[in-house]
Length: 266
Image (tube, rainbow, N blue to C red; front, side, top):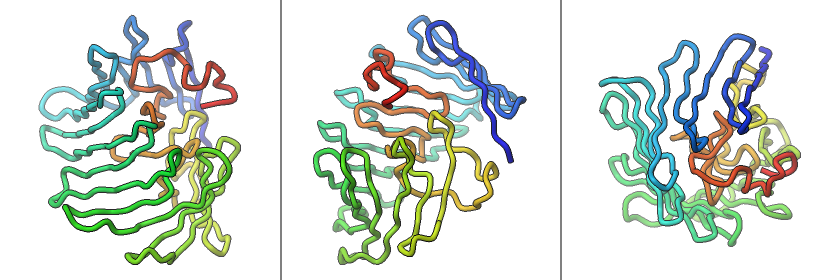
């Protein structure tokens, strides 16, 4: 299957239209502060976005009335996402809590809707996550994975799967592109295990778009940042990023995160 996308922008640089494969059209609306307020994709319910007084995106609502899907976002003192909830027709589907270090590196991710609270803990070397642990309720921390780090930040080379004793039982190698994005995962023997493709903005394409049937299950994807599959957002340390429309749900100086040089940095 071939995939093409066409993007349109207003004079302020806001994306106003996306056309996929020549027919699927998504329209975007903004307020006077250039915040995304509405999204309409052909054949789908409209999406409305809400913000607090600090410019943080606090809600994303698809549809109207009692059957609407309502997602909410909470923030910590540094305006980083600290909670996420999702309910459809008033029935809770997801509730997550996030804990972040002062450096912006994530410390923990908690599934608060599980019958017994499930926590993923991340050990950092001060810049990058180097190991994952799991905890059920108040139980002990159980090793899950360790990472082989390359030179520089966001340059993981491999994920080592660990048993409960912390011993390596499997190795998966990352095959990053020039941006560091992980699109292919190789087994310990070098065989291709899984792959995926994304748009230039990091939005994952449907598996039907390419021939290899198994999509990657790595938490690290586009530019090797962390994918929060529950919300569709990506954790970029000081901010969260939505690859569907290529922006952050937080009011900030445009392109400041890339030092005004988006052709070379992300």
